[in-house]
Length: 489
Ligand code: ADQ
Image (cartoon, rainbow, N blue to C red):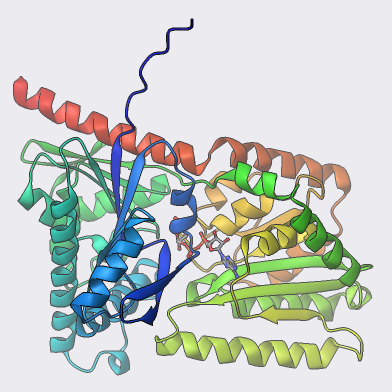
């Protein structure tokens, strides 16, 4: 008889993010349909199996009545999700207002709202008040579900006020905060009227994580320059209390993508796509439809490439998949119509009766269709103007086991620091440079393509989302031990 060691129970991890990994559609007074939602924050965290994870987040819908709230909470509990109910007014001020109209553009170097988006200074203040109120509501729910020994991992710019609220409830709670967007230069952050309060609230966490060393350095500089605190190689020190600040580059669940390529339905998709685009090289863009993703410039670069290289006109196709996101923000509506106009113009200019150079889809693809698309692609184009990391570039590399295609990657995406050696790095603001990189990529000799791909493939398959989460949480556990040691000394 083999003597089995009793398995240690997994540590409970409370993942707190603005949105839950499912979206809820109301079917009746007490019945709900739940659908998995996709984005760069949800996808990597879903692959994390080492912890007993619970999600806490906004339900994504307004549920004013108690019956509806109770039924939704029960349905979500099956998915290990716990909803935070925010009313329409708070959502408008906190989510549409302060998060999406102020913090998101600022952190991506797009500045603060212009006067036409900000009628009065009072409205700015009321958005910030709503932001704090919403964060407090998240803290209430976390506090209600917290059990001793849990680790609380707060995510993203929506919840910068949360670490402070949680520590006010319970100073022993292990609290980590991770930012998925870039943290901008302190010169940008100092424009924000609430700059100090936000920094101080985040500093209440035990561990603060960013995708890259540069973002961590910008954050520490903001704390030293704006708050006058001391920055050390470990983090930020305030009156003897050290808050650890470090880089934890995210990854993907690469095995999930590699395994999917073997599935019959994915193989069928691949065959269909190969037949449809036979005789043409396939270029691919997959982005949420957002200003930061640089979609119009990318398409203009493709146009310039077609202009300069007439011999390629009937031999290449660009598939641009853009998921509509934050559709209520007026800038996003403008962006959609701008992209449509450019695509129509270019297809009118270079298309024939039987083929067009750009296929543009405004919708989410299911996982298997996405894997098939990645697999048949010759050149992927990721031209974000700024991007915290960019996981599309990782997913593309994981699915290129047979093609070994080329990745053109913006130097302003965090991924440029991890995949830069294998990708062709471009300045996405320079349309001519992107156009000539397309030409270089399409003409690249096979051995160079293979070397570049192998380099990136090694990185993507060894720096996974599982490893990212395990490293962050283990370091978070250690910071508490350190803190206890310090108090014992
Ligand atoms: P996002 O801005 O959402 O994430 P990204 O990292 O590219 O950006 O992730 C997008 C995710 O959505 C990918 O997993 C992709 O597969 C999926 N997706 C995109 N378009 C899709 C479509 N049409 N159909 C189906 N799926 C689609 C934020 C930051 C990023 C950071 C991540 C993770 O803005 O910089 O990399 O968080 O930290």
